[in-house]
Image (tube, rainbow, N blue to C red; front, side, top):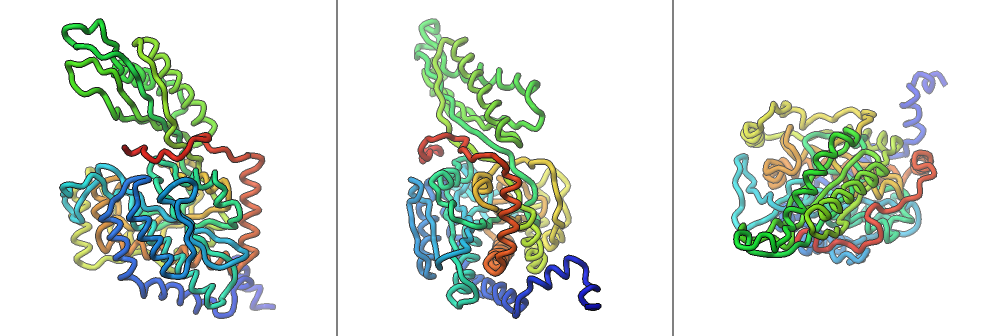
Length: 478
């Protein structure tokens, strides 16, 4: 008894939950994933080269599906009315643990794997958010868990969810809406980044739409009075929305691009389109502010004697965090550790950092694990993982796949993703996710506590997709 009481409470709790061979099975998981380093590297770099944008990820999705099928998973493809979405399953019964996999690229970020900006001619997209690494690591983690189930280390069902079009297409929202997560106990995910940390910062809820103005074409010099400019409608809307910024909560983010402004200066445009994002930490505020933006569009149409309609493109919830699962994942991230660079990779990293217009963190931070912090703000980004998190207890991490200081959605991030730097970070994520999923299979108490926390934090809220009942926007990148 004296020995037991000399433990800290945390150590005592961990000792209670430890199982025979705990250290050896964790080492086996880590070594098992590492032993397939070259295979997973090949897959990730192939998807990096494909660089397919949202809902167009035909080859990327097929490669991940084949990898899972070859490793004994049963794959359902084309789920939720999305051709590139899939669910891969192995095992039976409870618990059901899901792992999210993404694989879409971003338009306009084709970049060679060099520390200098070097566009790849003939390519229109690149993996500036590292989703080629995301999907591959998730598949790797799923395969490792499958091996343990096959070896009768524990029972249950492992699922890998192939989730298209995270970048603005809200792919997971349709998968949630289709009920694909209804019987899942815990979901695990990750995201490429410039450091190693368990995600304990929420995300911004988001609602997006394309506003389309219709006018009358006419010769812009000879008969401008006969025309009505759809572009004037877009510009009037944009002006009014920009005036709104003074009168909305400061945490709000409003951004837009004019995707069609006409074809020739001497023709009054009879069609113009602007693509808007509305973000806020609270989903209710997103809806309110979006409705205000829509009224600005109506006013712009009225004032320019044009007409306007809009199509909802995406809508995502904020991220519902789960501290119970985050603490478990944090322990596993500490076990795995960060990323170390070779001398050649250090040289690459220094050259890349020289392109930054700001002071970058020390390169050594790629090898560090950040402490688990309770951050109150919602960060600056949005993710359709938020909708999953309002359906099932969810936990995720960031892994250093990019040189420290690298911003997401940049040519520098794309470049890192095509190198060993990106692959090493990907392997960190795969190992941590596999270990965390394994914890959920081996500890019914961990899952029960995570569910209890989820139920308490969700409260009386009944999930409702912010994008309504529209069908997947399969051509939103056109």
